[in-house]
Image (cartoon, rainbow, N blue to C red; front, side, top):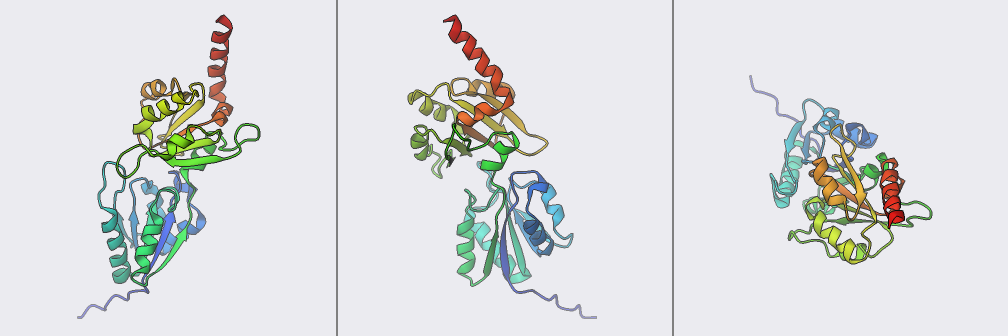
Length: 262
């Protein structure tokens, strides 16, 4: 008996932001796209529990894309995405956070357009806003911060981002993604600007059961991070808004007492 040929749907690609880590923080639209997917290509920063939204019949392929351990180059991911769309139908490209916040989402949309494949983007909660928020740290607050910057800690060349030199001078909240391994360098920038007492928070695996949290000031944060055993992936939050966190009050009291003694 000849097996019936599998019907291939119209090729299309959906870029979906999975959010900061908690599988319940993906949008309903993102979850529905996963349910409809024939193939899911997912990154290292995606909680694998999010894949439970996809059909059990869907092909699920891990494509890495974490700093220091790329399973596939970006070029290879682009080609896989297109090849699977042409051969299977609907491909969901699942990315941590939001696809357009240091997610190289536009590159993937543009690559798909080169093959005349329809591509849709479903935004996700970026860790730059949602993770501090879950810790009750607002990125803006009246009287403390009128704006916020989101900066990458490390460029493609491995150097510290030039934008951080400007960010260290601003009164805005500065959220640094992919910057934990440059924490000492970033601290030096703030110290050189005379901002050694600025509140800082570092959050690893934000929104997940493995979350770790460190809080301090520019002068102490490296030591606190080491004591807490915090590693990547983590976000850094520099700004007066960090002082609103309940755990910062003892730090404030300590420095006030030291100042009185002097």
